[in-house]
Each structure stands twice: as structure tokens, then as C-alpha cells.
Length: 263
Image (cartoon, rainbow, N blue to C red; front, side, top):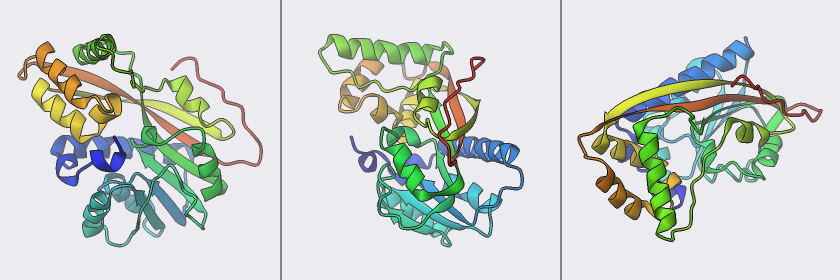
């Protein structure tokens, strides 16, 4: 399923999501200013800007910057523009930035890059970044923390495979995520977010964030039917998200990836 078909402002803007994305955005910018104190950015590009949750943080930290927001969903952009009218909004696929004719000091992606990062994404970033320009991304990675929710999701994947459905399970390890950006100077840290909801609320939350479609693309309804069989709607489930806060800097020299073994 395409990104623009997944996200709806009405579903997306539930209280649980606002807190979730806001806290991650704040952690990302705190880390950015920790690593690059005094950073100034005249031009900022935000990828997958959605309804403007992270955009608010950009405007707070860099109030005099020109901010360009890119998202695949017209509805999301319209919603953001109502409350944040001073930014420039562009409907486009964040995985293809060839339409941009200017370069930026800072590129932001808050919990969205897993939708479009691939082999060509690094080249796109190089093309839109100024020399010494910086990217700041928050990207979900595979959590090694055991939880009942994680076990349920794995059972669904096993069930789908047995039923003959092609597996589209897409998760990124820390190592794999960092290596995608070989050639750039890197800094990163892991940020964890723990949530606990009823099974019914979890389904709503995962759908509203696009996570359900990301995990079960083309098999969402079948996966939901099996979910209903595995757990009761009132069951309480906890889950800890592992999010890598990744800072990248464009340099004149190719930088080899060095993965921190302690993470």
C-alpha cells in the first residue's frame, strides 16, 4: 500500500500519536544540539512532515529559518498549513528529491525514513545538502526487548507464511540502518519509548501510524483477523519502541561506518 493511501489526518491526529511523535522529535533536536551546539540553519528541509508535529520543533529551534516541508499526502500538508502557515509545503515523494533546485543546511526526518530510505536515498541527500550540511533522522529499529505484543506480531507473520502469503516483514537493525548511510559522518544514540494500551487501542494506534500497513502490506485484513483470534480486545499489552536518533553530515571525504558494539 502506498504511503498516501495509509495516512489520514483524522486517524493520525489522535492524542497517543501527538505525544509519541512530539517526544521523539524533541529527543532528536536535543541530541542534534548536543552534538552540534550553536548550530545555525538558514534553510531546513523536512521529509515526511505530516501534520507538522516535528515542524513545530523546527520553528522553535530555528525561528528565522526558511522551512520547506515535503509529504506525499495533500491532506496532511493542508492540515499542517492551517496552523503553521509560514512554511513552504510541497506534495512529493520524499524518496525522490530531484525536483528540488536548492540546497539545505539541515534535513529532518522524524519517524518516517523507513518508508522511503533505500539504495538511492543517500544520493538524494547528497544532492540537496550543502557542504557540511546535516541530516537528523529518527528511525524505528527492531527492538530486542521481549513483550507480549512483539510475540503476537511474530505469530501473525508465521501464520501468514504458512498460509502461503509472501512475507513482506520489513525491520531494520541498528547496524543495517547506519550502514545505509555509508559515506557520511555519523553520530547516533538509541531512544526508547514504552507504551501500554489495550489490544483494541493498539490496533487503532498501529493503523493510524501506518505501522500496520508497513508490516503487513497487502495482507492487512488477513493479519487483523488473526490478531482478533490471538488476543482479546481488552487485553493490556506493553511495547518498547527502539528508535535510533541518527545525525549525518556531508563531508568532502567518504567516511567508513563504525558501528558502536555497545548498542
